[in-house]
Length: 167
Image (tube, rainbow, N blue to C red; front, side):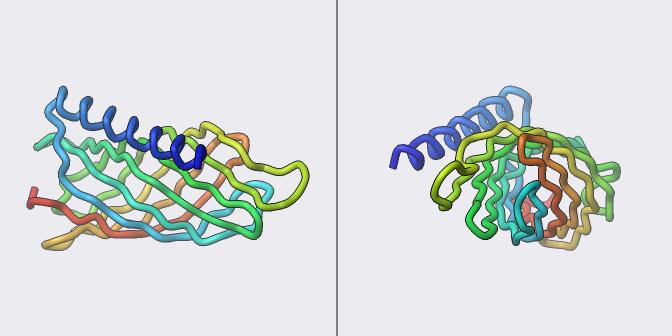
């Protein structure tokens, strides 16, 4: 229960920070999204990855703030990862566009193996890039992501972002 309370506090702090920073600079909540993919964590077997994100943007810019959560579980190890990313797309969101981004996240590892294990918390740096594919009511994306941390991770994932309004 203490672990859940700590995770909930971190997630709430990240969201509160995002909203306060977004409001101060004219960024507003513009979309939410879901993703699935595959992850190859260091010293663990590959696994499926699932996640979601919120998207904040300032009208007329190509910069997006993306707080999100990712989760994977492989054999006896899992990772719950609240993160905060900044993404830049090179052309307007109404066109197919490459994008790049970076951010940071907390990794809450849990291991169910008896004895010394990999449970604990770790800070990671996110580097990613991909392609946005817009349609009238949503944006699809495919992304490659690398996390530099004590347990580095590489992933390929795709998903959908659903805007609240048309840009």
